[in-house]
Length: 359
Image 1 (cartoon, helix red, strand yellow):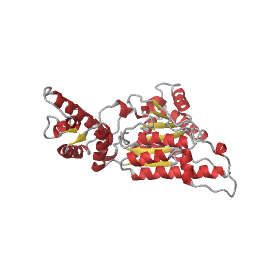
Image 2 (cartoon, one colour):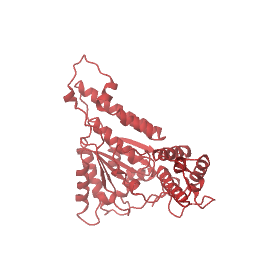
Image 3 (tube, helix red, strand yellow):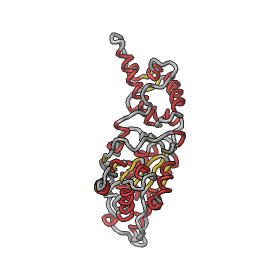
């Protein structure tokens, strides 16, 4: 197995299947250009009006407000939105052009926001009229590739059928291809995907995701797949300050806060953990804060006859971060350990109120 960036090794292909479907976003389907009426040659429009008509302002505002850092990713999303808005405007004037290719590749380590952005993207494409339903189907190799002859095609077609009208998000897509085994059934799944991505591009958007170095190898071995991807978005690891800001948002949403001493302790703790192989960015921050809440509750419950005020129930102290380990050694469990919500992000509605950047 090839090492991931910064020495991090991605999980193996034997992971439990995570095939889930998320509901479509909350927005109503926008009126088609035909329903809104074709404009005459002398008419004028503004793109602000087009944005309001599509109802995407709240999606773009939420991404800018809630997605910490990732400025290049946000910029690319704005560029895609602008392309589609202008395309819609052109259609209203009767100017026809081929539908833009919207298949994408998201690269980056776990916990950098890939799945969350995919959910928002599905909703945005639905509101702009480029996807009929705007839901997201999250799949991995186990959902597409069978173990025996004759299993792969039905599995792949079933997933594609359920994704029609929305986005198919294939996580760790490089596991579809096994360069060491020419008889691997993954090649059959890739062949079906390529055909559907070309012939059904007006009904489905495919997003491939994974570590950048592994995706580069995958595209190098599958040039047909590379040629079908129009947009490559790289999700960089978060800096320490960004991780602390993400943690602050998470705590505020749960009506907790860090004391000044606890904030310094958490910052030092994360700084030490960031270079560990299995550190998972925002997901790891969430897991550590969950443990802090557990220790906080145990600390208060250990003194049952003491009177506690509202602020005591909200304030996280240094001992809640480190527990009994004054030196800040790692917990016995993996910092980014298994988490149902994080491992199955597609089960979260596109309008969920949680902070972006977990997946």
